[in-house]
Length: 408
Image (cartoon, rainbow, N blue to C red; front, side):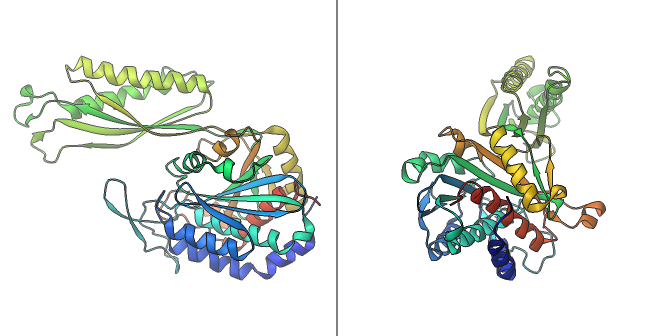
């Protein structure tokens, strides 16, 4: 069933203000678990709409609105920025800076569209508060910090989220991406991959660069590890199974003629199947330790940085949402898609209480821009170039999911 015309008319009348709100958050990103000003601003806005709000997990915000008898439904929007120097050229581009956990100063950018998610969540909350005659029940908005590091959902849950807020019978969420503005992409069943990030410290023996025979070279040893680790996918995983293993950082040494005493590299792995994941993690540890032993090096250190769970869209809930979205956005506006190898901690909210959930993507760009090539998420040039349409579609999709379960 399509949304009541009053909701869409109000959204359209307020679209300019919604774009301004989005630009405000775009200018002022904060790093994961440091979203203090963002959380304060969100709390101020939702309380102004009439919601009861409290902080959760440090910099998360939970906003609840009760509206008579009916089900409890939750909606999640993430709020953190990334340590990226923005290069979009937008007049509202971020010039913000932040401090990483290791003390490093960095530029900060909403390079994954969380500014869009905040704005869509807030506008959806406003419309529900303004039109209580069109729905009944309780809605819980989760403005979650720390999605980029997989820390935020866990922090909110550890802070007693579902003991303090009403427990929902379903949880919804969405993410902007470089698709056509006005469209959404939904997966039935597995929607996003599990992810594991590891830090490997390779220990060697320092020596002068002119005397390598006196060393155990951690750079050479680390290079062997990096090369051999590629075989976890190419030689230890069936072609029928999906696995991505990326080594994107490698740090060692300070001078070209000094062999250092250690090297550090990081691994990021994506998988859809628990068995594949377990086998790959075991293979990583076996290879890293065996290569160190082969070089006569000290035992390496393998440190888990973080992990993300699989996002599994409950089939019945998701098929119902797809039908409702097609009523609202048109057949051409809703695309049923296979799972993506990106990862999210969104699923933790439903998994923690056994509640079904659905997570989908909405486009942010003009069709001609996509044909010409646009930057993807996590790029310094990522910026939806049709923000009004993207925001409008995001709000309509969120309302469709929520009101569809909150009918009075």
